[in-house]
Length: 179
Image 1 (cartoon, rainbow, N blue to C red):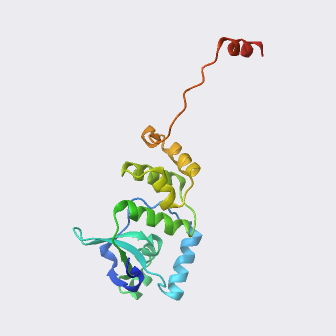
Image 2 (cartoon, helix red, strand yellow):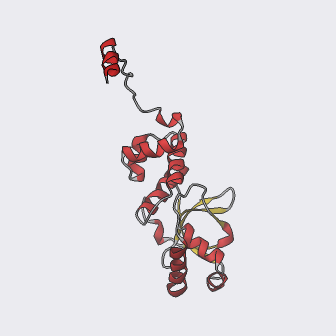
């Protein structure tokens, strides 16, 4: 990367911006109200981060979904901003955009566990290893394992080496009966 994307902010019509389908971040109503108040008082002080899909002529949100929601849900903000949002564009593959979304979110707040487990599942389906997920999403292996367990899909455990099951000998079975 030669120069950070933040040095090339674009004013994009909100109608050309769409949410991604993988963001696990949620914001409670009081915080959304606070975000609205912040944008109303201070304006948009940070751009949203998007990937530009040339084929669809759309900007897909990587980070900033809740700031996007504010302009969509509050006519006063939409009118003041003339229907435009400041956008910083990144050009990355889907798996790297997913990782960017998670990094942005984790630096700020909480995630919905079910949605995070779906992210892990989808990254595995895209061919990403546990090591890649740990490195790029800032997770440890135990967290990845817990999220995999939530999805319940055996395919997510393909990288795990399982040991042979313990088979009790006759003496062990007799000891159990004695209890």
